[in-house]
Image 1 (cartoon, one colour):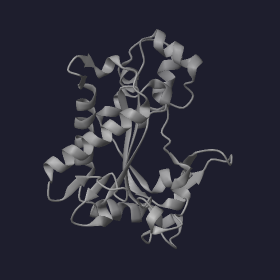
Image 2 (cartoon, one colour; image 1 turned 90 degrees about the horizontal axis):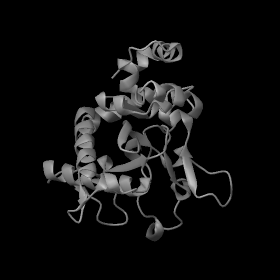
Image 3 (cartoon, helix red, strand yellow; image 1 turned 135 degrees about the vertical axis):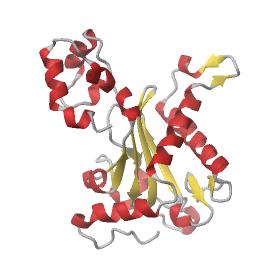
Length: 248
């Protein structure tokens, strides 16, 4: 396992380290966003057997994430055939940088309603031998949160293997990231795509409150920004989230 650039560094230094890492990365955030949105569009305009629109199929989130990853790596390889390729072996990252393995990247997606990311319990476990090591879980990550047919957040950064915390129960198979990783090691790539995020992603908008918004035809962040009605709760929610909603 490679030495982490965050090793022995106080959390106060993590933001600067993350910025340096992103500046070194071969793809800038704007191109990552471009490739992500292109791949997402290609995914949902695909047809099964040339007959069935993917929109008609209730795909599990894991399948959506897998197809998205494959389309992303395909586009990356098409643009930079001498620099990037998709995974070929068990030890490969999802995106393999041919020129410099340090830039090889894992892609992690989550289709749940929220901004958290989840890994397998094994993400936090050291392999007992090189033979069983598989891919290194530390390094660059491109992460994507989505819900139904909308991407809600894209991030780029660095995650170390010990950033993953296994689920509490001994039989649990999931691992979650430590809170400080989201704050200081993953950079949010903003864009107009976030306007398609469901209104439930705003703090305080649970199922009951969502029915009020939906009754006023406010389903997404974009709908809230464009709202011209007189419902006081909806107008207050917009004001409370004004800076955030107008940051993309």
